[in-house]
Image (cartoon, rainbow, N blue to C red; front, side, top):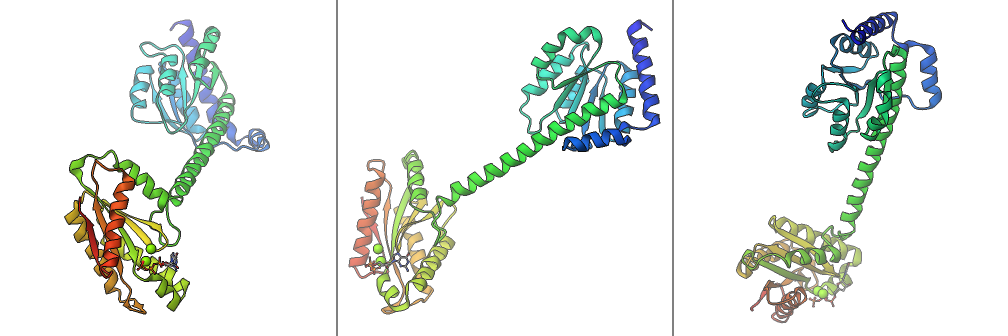
Length: 347
Ligand code: GH3
Ligand code: MG
Ligand code: MG
């Protein structure tokens, strides 16, 4: 046995002895110190111990288990590297000098990986390694433990790791919640509050994205307008009119296919983008919506409430504005031809 391994063996025996006396976490001094700090650490931690000396590895593993952490042992950097491909750990306690893959290599590897969870990296060093510590910290280590160290020292370092990991976890939770809020606000800003259809902003953005889609795919737009809606409001009041707009949006949504999208264009007008539908298919779809609204049999001063629609297929030769204008013209024709009908814009 050389000098270094003899020392390691003595240290291992000493850790065993300290463990059997009882973990420091049970000491009122340490618990009180942690409570005073205002940060009780996240426990238990999942810890990967990487040491290529079997006695030390076993003793440290025993000590960490005594401290109630979940421990995985790796007898060398190469084995740790393989483990890290599939598993994340809260803490890695790694020897500095190891053949093949050193502690610094391992630390760089952990920092380079884009992991969701932060890993707290502690180097286990001997006195002769101390001058290299700057290199270790530059590689991304959080702390170091000089061998031989006491069980209580290990526990205090792990408590610090727990506090930092706890802060990281809280930050991550806050980030997730901010991201979700952001997404909710983003979506809400594109939804019409009354009908839950998309609003003008949503429509404009959708139109921008389909400008790039090729001619073969086919895209149609339908402009829909409620017939004689003013008369409806006059007869039944605006709140009842609002309910009708909601029912029309619901029934239109029920009829639409997966690639279609409903928008409230403004007032009692809706726009439907019909993805992958040429003029004849879009005409069938819109007649389905028109019939569904008529079937609701909503009483109207003129009989039942109906809608009219104008449909235009997208052509690469015209702008989105002109595309909408063509559908609008077809809608006016539907109105002038007696309403409750779908008219097509012929290219
Ligand atoms: P046409 O068949 O020619 O479209 O006749 P119309 O009466 O529907 O057309 P007009 O443009 O004269 O009137 C539209 C009506 O739609 C007037 C307005 O009160 C009503 N309207 C627009 N937005 C809303 C809304 O959010 N809620 C309610 N209840 N009514 C609305
Ligand atoms: Mg109108
Ligand atoms: Mg109208």
